[in-house]
Image 1: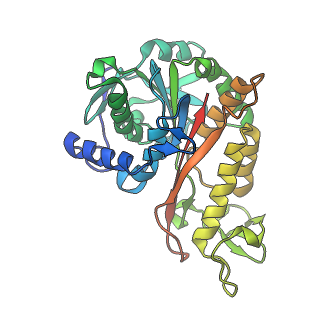
Image 2 (image 1 turned 90 degrees about the horizontal axis):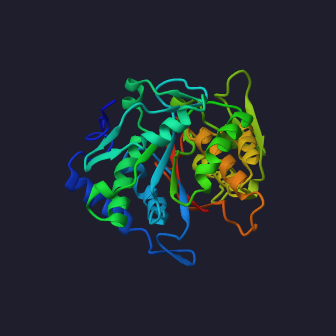
Length: 336
């Protein structure tokens, strides 16, 4: 159906390809060439979680995931992101043939997209909503950069993409979509990018949890005040008279979510998000991918493969006052 325009170029990230390339190079160069005991890209790291905010905010964090991403065997790349522009139940597929970036167009794998569409489980993204959505687009310049580093400057050699919006759903619904994607995940020809920011703190997000008297309390919770019991020694830099600063509460909430992701147990992550009400906008894409990873890992050697490892965590602002706001960003990879 034509080419989806890069609607956020020039606002959320640089529109000029030379400036954009230089910026992404700088972000990637800041990341060490070794993560843990492995050089980058990490062999077999075919799945990443990375943020989707404007590059001036989340670009440095996202570089950690993209530098870990192993695209050397990739023949297609799935990009899963949440819907910000319309309420979506289940998952939706693009109707576009290409996605524009300032560097050039990335081609959609229409064959695989049609395979998924024929299951009857996916709706179509309304074209206008597809263009307005940023959760998928924000990954494409980074993806282009890493594809160029992997396959060279001839973009005709780049693997095509399969953009998927993941909407609201129960733990069972996430699992069912994970089952649909598991065969593609097993295939070493496929790589996956999962788009998500973490905690959105502030009145604009109706989420302002603070710690007092042994509980984290969110005064903006709908219906009744939401509380969560935590241990005070989870916090760092605690002022004994005033309690921990708000940004420490945010860190604890995000670490609870990241720890749940690292277990590799999809239901644990879903339960943690339900209990904390953490405003992780990509919780459903993460849930679907965790369900797929868990299915692929069943019967495996149990060597830790198929579980996410977080390599970077940042916040847009260290919140100290109730009228402030921040968004958290995290980068992770999983070896398959």
